[in-house]
Image 1: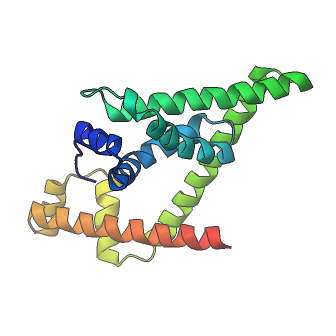
Image 2: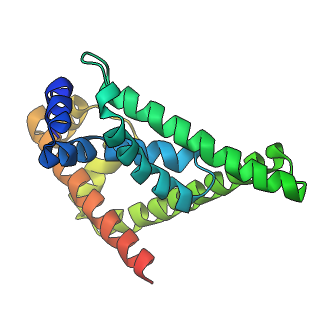
Image 3: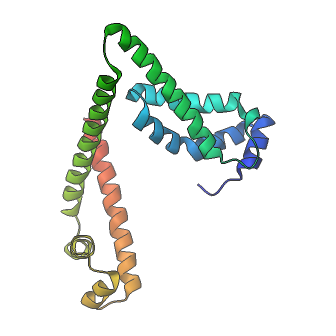
Length: 190
């Protein structure tokens, strides 16, 4: 998304412009969801908190001061809501006798395990996608990323220009990214 003028956006939201609020969400939802995915007590709560951040922002938009960093303001709201979620979890867990450190450790292990599984799935999908590339594209990819040859070195080996090598690498990366996304989507649908 292109750079947005936060002060203008906030002014429009304060005036009741719903499109401006939609723009705010679109511009910052990935950042907020990433934050809550890491710090919330559970995946379900992460999604709930991410949504609540924007509702809380709308309710308190009148407190936003021009010149402030809008993303940092939203992350502050996310941090406070995440802390509140942890307080609720530890309060209910306290009644059951579970220590905060045990909850945090379990959460950290869960997040690490999930990310490790995602990384393993992406690595496997990358390997499968690499095997579908034409031989010359696979060779360029392996030399550039595996053998760490520069685009200039590859241009010399391939007897072409550096710009041609860069364009080829861009097409190869795009093709691999699309292939990986398709494979992961199919895997997720099973």
